[in-house]
Figure 1: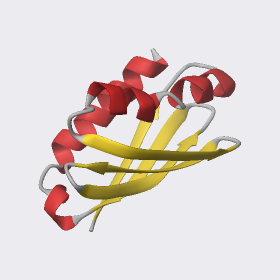
Figure 2: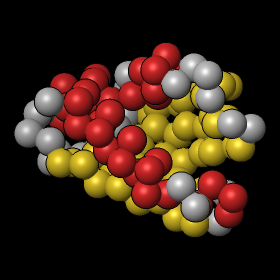
Figure 3: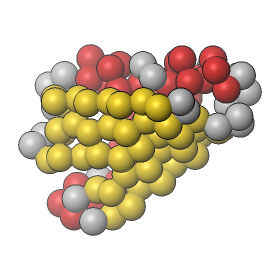
Length: 100
């Protein structure tokens, strides 16, 4: 396993950032429907747990929306860890778009 820990800053209110970030996985599923499936999300206050399959690999982690940033944490399976940079870039880009 390889840890993926991202912190994406924002200048929104915490409530607005939370509203927008709750669309992250559904947008990812729509944009990447050819590789992403079985998306699950469970939110409690500003913390969400997620899981999904990407090209047959199970991925899971959590998202925490704070006053000034959004933290995304996940453990990547070894085979997927080779693409950690590309995965980080894709998630960061999509998160920044939602928080802009």
